[in-house]
Image (spheres, rainbow, N blue to C red):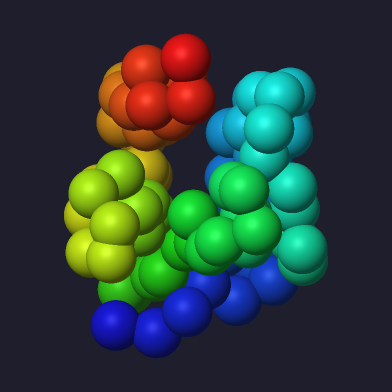
Length: 84
């Protein structure tokens, strides 16, 4: 599975807008977020599917699908619950 291309990142722009509003996250590059100076969230793609790698239990990243609106809502809730 490869890191998300700029085209894949553009497909999830509505999700990224929501993530950018979450206080405490810093976007280093489009689609790559840090929390407390540590890598926290980035995206991958596999054919037509997009996945988020999120570090809820350091040092391990959890991979979640984020292709659909419902999947994106789950990711945002995970982030909000983690950051508080």
